[in-house]
Image (cartoon, rainbow, N blue to C red; front, side, top):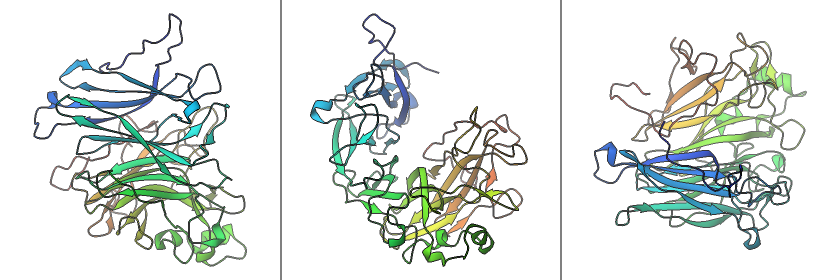
Length: 419
């Protein structure tokens, strides 16, 4: 626990406008360096300077900098603020990555909160923060630019954002959850959320137009179309429609990695939309008591293009994100990590076994599943079954794996064991 950022801007009062929360960070290691003491931690956080808030205190600022691992006193602090007069809005970024090239990327939806309620920017902009290490000055710079994404007016903007680059730092993806009306299944128009990608193949110099990931319909992902059993469909629908007529949707959470071939790998929860637009059905199905929603790895074989997606159903959960006791509970927090080579993906999420707590996700363990992209196979549990592993049961984290987070890469001991 080493302090590397201190809030100081309070004008003599108690309220610090540079107080930082929800930090993201990455390790930058200079090319050729083998001494951890010479590496840096780069951090990027939201601050409470109220420049994008309808209240006297609130969000709108960034606090960012870097600290040398071997000398924590060698630290920097930079502040950036929203400027509503120039239609420049900062808020709370979900997404962050540090690439192998020593470049950080922090995209977020451009929301105007000055009225007290979030309004997606009129020009439909995604704000992308970016910086690279200057070996001469020994510092990180910062620039920003916009990507355009038209979101339907029924939802005020993308609800979640993630970013990741390939192991060589050249191919990257920004993934958002939203509805831009570009999916290819007419029956689900204006019905649900799905992933939307931006792709770069030149280390971020240029970015593609938005790429919508079609989950449903004739052009949908086979693994998604078929993950529910006939018996489950009979409980949900009367009469049971063809699977190509179902509306598959995602919720407001995901994570992304990039494999050895520069293909996007999205960890995400998927369920069905029944009647209400933009709803995600999370009820349980008797007799096994699992939720209708399920964790997936959406794996592209052609850099996110239509028709290139494989849907790996990683298991079934007992609880759905937000389905918990009002006093205390936990989200699923689905996350993904890769091997350093990018040939295997590992997805984890938090979930409570109903034999422990029958109603809420308030005693969560971490569940994990690996996917070998070369063989298109999934890992088994400790009993050899085609199921995810509960990786915290029996440890000090049993029934209390709250607010867990996972790094973007795993450790590989070379003998088939991954941590």
